[in-house]
Amino acid sequence: METDTTDLIARARAGDHNAFRDLVQGHSHELQVHCYRILGSLQDAEDALQETLVSAWRNLDEFGQRSSLRTWLYKIATNRCLSMLRADSRRPRNAPLAPRDHLPEPTSAGDAPPWLEPYPDVLLDHLVDQRPGPEARYETTEAISLAFITALQLLPPRQRAVLVLRDVLGYHAAEVAQMLDATQESVQSALKRARAGVDSHLADSSSRRPARQPDTAAEHRLVARLTDALERADLDALIELLVTDVRVSMPPALLEFRGIEAAQRFFAAATFRPGRTYRVLPTRANGQPALGVYLADPHARVLHAYALLVVTTADDHITAITGFTPNVMTLFGLPRTLPEAD
Image (cartoon, rainbow, N blue to C red):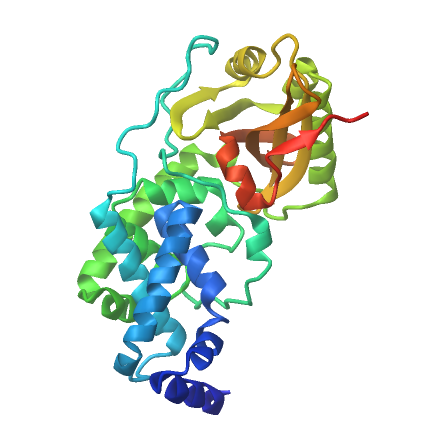
């Protein structure tokens, strides 16, 4: 295997694009997930990945094999993400105002940043076994959940990168220091602050953390009941599925409705309005069940993409529903419209 890698590197350095593609293709998906964790946006992560691969191609002569190729690529990707965050030109500085004419008063400002996007599980299926290092603190499922990704986005960029490299990927402090051109002391200091920030957010968001064993039969039954409630416009049936401190949020708008009563007011005003008919297509995002929701057009025999709902469950109840605009649905292979059923 090492001989093959050495041969591919030699050929790539000689200008063989096919050799370079073969060299990096086994790492591309995990690098995209890495960039997504740091950036919180799949579109930004894809841009960062492409820039990482271009940089690796141009600077392959600098790879001296003192570390593994994977570690070298992670170094480039991490620093590419940090450069993007420093530029910050593509990030909305303020969340767009949500239409408030038909919404009840939110219980609080949501903590999900305006740029947050869900990550399709179908992309996770392409990942090889990453075998995190022995110092990793987070399981793979938790490290891709919306609650965890949101918590990361609330950290300063350098702390974000350090925590992902150390506690998700399991790199040693010395390796992270080399990746970031920093001292081990500064890495440990950043990690300490990052852990405190993430732990505080996840403790406050404990009801939104995913089940340890997702995609179970119980989860399937719960999603089927949620689908049925939406398609029958049965608000009472939906409310029965929620825990008492459920959270409903809808990035990019910084609005949150917490608790059953607030959720009931929200869904009554925003979803179960007279004359509305919905259809639902199941999918998965961030290791969690998700629903593509379509709204019937009153003037044509068609339904339009309305929202993507990412659902967090615990046992046989829903602890959080995060609604995203229909713009993200194409990332999941979901159509923009559906024909009306006969």
